[in-house]
Image (tube, rainbow over all chains, first blue to last red; front, side, top):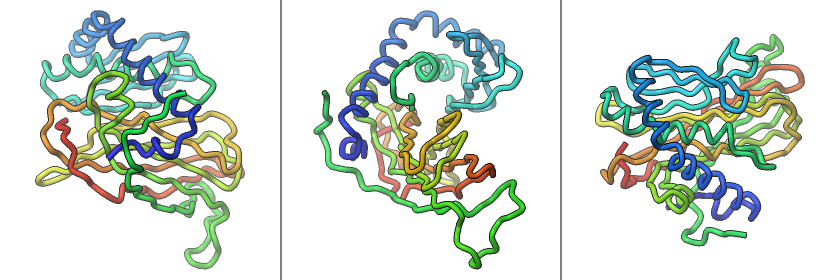
Amino acid sequence: MADYTDASLTPRELDHELLYFEFMGELGVKNASHYELLARELVKKREIQFEINHVYVRYALDRVGCSFQISKDGGETFKEKYWVRTGWRKSARISYLPLFFAQCETSVLFKNNLEPN
Amino acid sequence: MTFLTTSTKSSLSMLMIFTQLVVSSPFAPAKGATPPMTKCHIEVFDAHISTFIRRTQGKEAVKVNAESKCDKPIRNLRLTVEIYKIGRFRDHYVATHTLEIDGLVYANQLIRNQATFKYCKNTKSSKYYGIAHAEAIVNGIHMQTVRAQSENKPPLKCGT
């Protein structure tokens, strides 16, 4: 079974999707060591907040997962954009979180004419 | 331009959901008495191993796509997709993503949420499905759809 998008997306949308996930992969490779440090910091502090391209973002761990939240009012309030189950083990979290960071930051950094999905 | 040619169209779990739940409006139509003011629908598709992610990153990931369309202009759309894994005793919440569009979405404009996924940890066969729901401001009223669920729950070689 494959992406339904194979059949229903326009060529432009297909290109967008490929570029989007390619960008995500490149971001993960480029920032691998930074994301690993960030993962360790997050596991230790449970919550971290910073700015990416003038957008306030927050990662927060809960019992079994991690959420990514974005603020549109300069850090006053945050809304959840992504959540993923990482498991509760520290090692499982540290191994999955770098992938999650690349996924979330792509949604902020990727620029295209189409709405980044 | 790049086309993916590796597959046939996946079976769609198409759930037509007409907007009928008025959250903040006192003018909710009585059930069965008045047709819905706005025809909106969301479709949530079957969980699958993403060919996009495999192709661009060389990784396996389970992914669920959804789309939303309304026959009237809407504002501040939030289209959420949740992925669940079927467990022995209960289903496990695996991942979620909310696509948020600030401002206007034109009538009949198709909005797709295609970024809800989780990377596989191993190749253990597991069954997944998605649930999608949306909320938006329609004619100044905050409205939301009911939750739509994938029709099929195919086994995928993806342990999470």
